[in-house]
Amino acid sequence: MSIQLRTRKFTVKEYARMGEAGVFDDGERVELIEGEIVTLSPQNPQHARIIEELSALMFQSFASTHRILVQLPLTLGAYSEPEPDLALVRRGLPDGERHPEVADLIIEVSRSTLSKDRRTKGALYAKYGQPEYWILNTKKMRLEVRRQPLALADGFGYKDLLVLTPGQTIAPLFAPEQVFEVSRLLGA
Image (cartoon, rainbow, N blue to C red; front, side, top):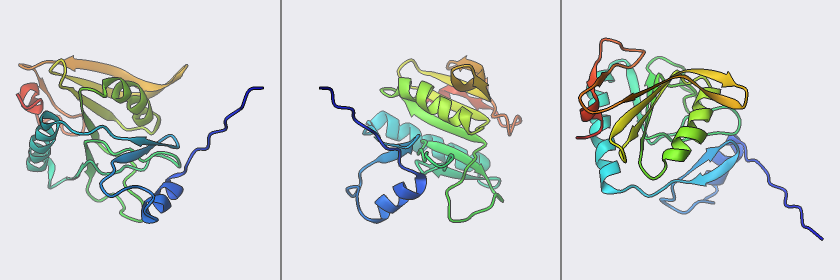
């Protein structure tokens, strides 16, 4: 006799109620991905330092035009509320009772979670039309830039993938005049 286990997806609303009810421990780092509550990896010192420096750089460059969300939720559909390391959300978009639904740029700092950030989060961000997604790959010290979300035969992804290394530069799609050195983004 085999036992059939049934799983259940949680909605963004249910996830919020769980947080309000104290289901998660204080300081427990979780996010909702396609209806599943996923724990976030602990941050090593390099990861934390890069996020600190990167957020300061983004505030300096875009504070007048964008809200810089640092490890704060985006609401993507009814079943997902990821918390990217950084998300640049255009000022003037409606604020309400939900977290922002679109960002001009999403950035993840990644070493031990590269596979998840590339596949799971990449597909999720593409599915919900996020125009540009950067992964700061601290394992190989390079920047992976994904642009132009699209539907694929087996899910969602990005049309363009650029892989940049220290010594090269990049400008976000929404601000082509703002050029960054990859080494600076990687905290090198």
